[in-house]
Amino acid sequence: MTSPAEKRASGDAEVQERARVLQQEIAQADEKLRRLYKMVEDGVTDIDESLADRLAALKSEGDRAKAALERIKVQLAPEVTLEPDHVERFGAFMRERITTGDTTFRKAYLRSIVDAIEVDDKVIRIHGSKASLEQAVIAGEQIGKDVRSFIRKWRAGRDKDANTYVIEIAI
Image 1 (cartoon, helix red, strand yellow):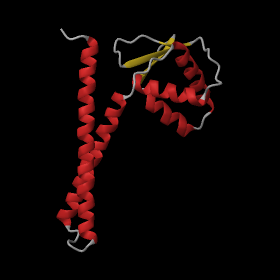
Image 2: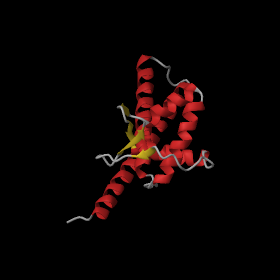
Image 3: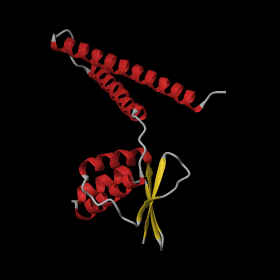
Image 4: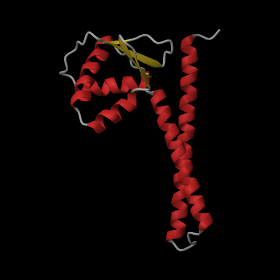
């Protein structure tokens, strides 16, 4: 029987191999684009419709591989454990920024960390991705070190999915 640590190591090796393959795909697409541009530059060929289509396809392949590699980098990032006081400080910091910050910041920041909001008579529940929240809290820790570290009504909730979070704000 395979232990959880062995499964994790096996998964990490697979992810690292996928990252290596994606890096090769990016390098190959970039090299092909470079060669095609060189041919046009040297007058060997002109940009016609089929060459333009090929350039677009190569750019698309490179962009797809780059986006996939970025997603993998998030998976390979070291796992962060958030302490309740980090979440509370982040909550206080964000409450301040969301109430006094400019509208563009507020909308963009909330969209980046919130997937859904439920409001009832006694509680507001905010749902989202743990990875997004962890990144936001870590960034907020760097920005908001002097933020008060207690807000009694802001607390992390429990969710069945280990990859999501629920924050409950008592009304």
